[in-house]
Image (cartoon, rainbow, N blue to C red; front, side, top):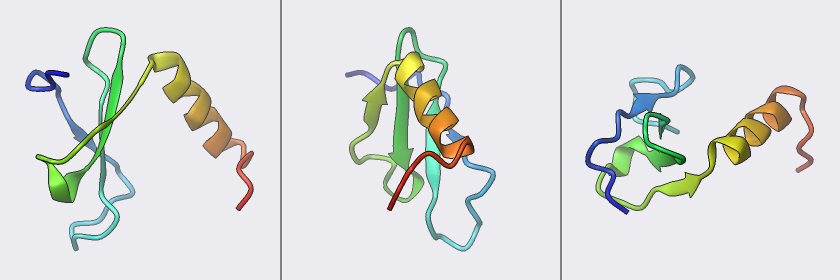
Length: 66
């Protein structure tokens, strides 16, 4: 998948000290891409916008169990 036109946004919860940095690109047609900002040439997790929104909703509502 060609992600060269992706506009990556770093999580506001990611600090500048190099730990736990997540970036998301939601400007692509029909997909949302998620990657580790420390490895920008590495793999990206790809989801649909609907899947991404369900994931965010689950996080916000504390629906995940560990």
